[in-house]
Length: 254
Image (cartoon, rainbow, N blue to C red):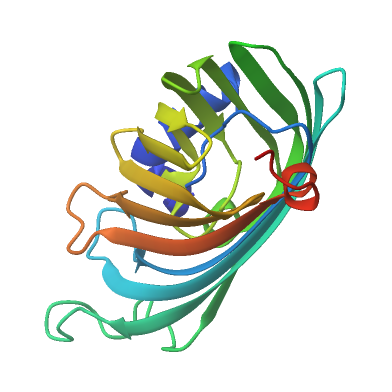
């Protein structure tokens, strides 16, 4: 009950966005198979305490990993699957022991918070619009265990110029819940792909650059605040590699 009340400000918009569609937004898929693998590190603030009372603040350091596979058929149907895992390590309490009851809600430093998600999505792509939607399952300590979640994304526009996108529970999914639903704009050309997005609680930016035919190396940066009086922002940084197998396996035209 405490966690549900404390996060009403955050979870409401997440659920609302999920009703519409659903740090890696929905984007056009290349023909054939595409695999993206990423690893990174994040930090976020965790709190414990009674309703209406003083809460302890902890900083959680969280390594995170993600893999996503997408296949676009010759008929432009999309089949996608992904899985990600984050392992958060709880830091020391930030409160002065003289200001809170030392016995209430004191957690052990180095306690581990596991977070993970797996999803399968189906969709279709046209010249100016595309979508993916399917079932997923997520594990998070604030959600009190495993929960079914909708996973999906939508984009529309002209990718080589600009397009709009929105997604929810479409990885990377970690301990900072405010990154779970985002919307923004993007650009995708032969050599570079850029996205920026936000949901007012979190802001993300990604940059993927072609390093060889069929291979792109990318960076993701995220900044968020799920609490109104948060003392330090939630941060996330990741590096990822995307392989477009059809382009990777065929020689370029002169």
